[in-house]
Image 1 (spheres, helix red, strand yellow):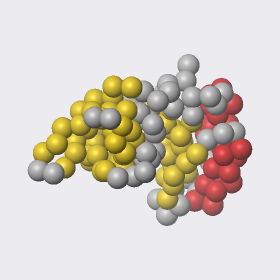
Image 2 (cartoon, rainbow, N blue to C red):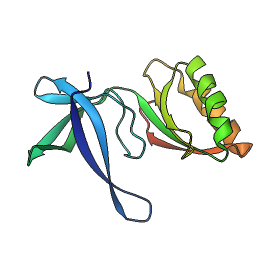
Image 3 (cartoon, rainbow, N blue to C red):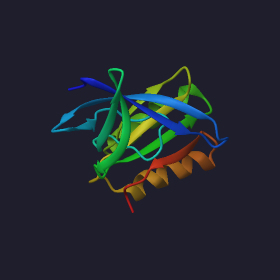
Length: 141
């Protein structure tokens, strides 16, 4: 149940700082991440995190229990390619959140999904110049 928003601060490749808010639910004294990060690196759906509370806002502190999920961020070169690609990833056991207008998708890969199949699919699409992708949080080895 999405009850709380946690504020994450991260630095991009250019060194600029950004903020992303993720939904979370209480998990004892901590919080479980309930959605897939679009931008924040090192965080995956289901991770248990601690927060600092300041002015009635929750700020990410640290991951205390990784979920074992991986997060992949995909940017499509053509928005028409997003739905078919995401349908294929769903068939492979993934879930996703996306915005067709921005051509951006965040993909959740559960711990029990074979990453090599996902990686092969993503690499093939990148080679065909359909998209580019980033392994934002890789728990699969």
